[in-house]
Length: 420
Image 1 (cartoon, rainbow, N blue to C red):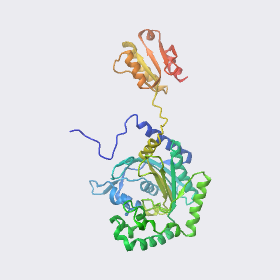
Image 2: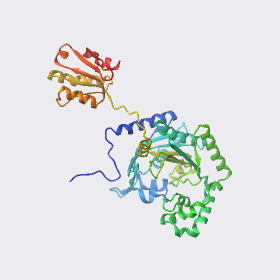
Image 3: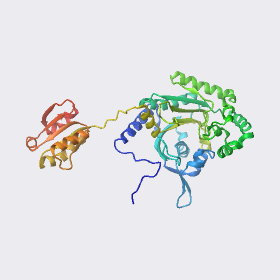
Image 4: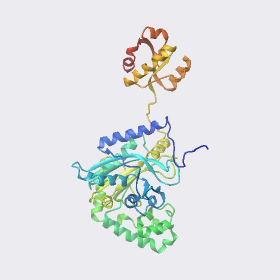
């Protein structure tokens, strides 16, 4: 039987994995600048965490979760997103009691959703996200958005579009919810079954429906902007002012609705404007969730965050034709002629590696010409040739592959010479 990879997953092989490492390292460096610390949570959690944390009315909970029973009959779910797990850890480990607040965290890891695979979307995908817990200051909203924008710009993306909206506080959302129900209820039978369920559960999610997005009632639906109270309006205006101060362009879209139930106040998405990127242009989404910590059993704690797919980021890079500056060269390839030099090359390569240099040698008894070809494949900066005569004199011939300069030096000076 020939085994094949499950649909919606991928093998990331050498040559490609270096691009992933570059992005992940860039994300970690930016988080260090912003003082976000890494958190690592389990790949699976109790199902109820996502039902309560993500929301019963969401597509993720209703259609996309990988859920199973363990041997004790407990319902377990492979995590479909990172926020609920991060907040669970924040509550369980009492991070809210630490003196340094707000608590600023980031994560990078695999998530799992059963959805139709398409360009940049997989059933197992890698998500990078940040969560800032403990501050209700609109400056924190601007910081989180700026961090996401900085990552995309740092890897070379230029064709970006930031969309923001306010979902308002609890009172604003209640008034808007009532208006949406009154608007859609008389003709809800014309909508898909999902929208019919959402009418009473969370009518705001109707606006996010892909099936009925062209229905005439969508265009005339009440705007949240008309129901923001003074406090919510002032908060959103402050967020916009801070983004302007940071030089970050944005567009306000009153119809922007995030697909998770826990959002309030600021919601945002970053999209790719690159030609040929695809019908789904969203790269990143996030927003404020001031009630989520309490929903998961913690104290009243405001929060805001975002998450992005590394796969989508890579697809956007490809669409813009951006080449990442990934160095796949090595410092030195050791070519040997004869049995004794071949034996000596084992410890010689080890010495180079101990000195902090990337080094490789032939392990297949290739001829000299084939060894030089191997050095080319490794894109070696230097090729060191060790023959019987050189070994007898404790010398080695070293060639700079860029300049073509060739020099004979003592074996013990090889590492220093390459470093110099």
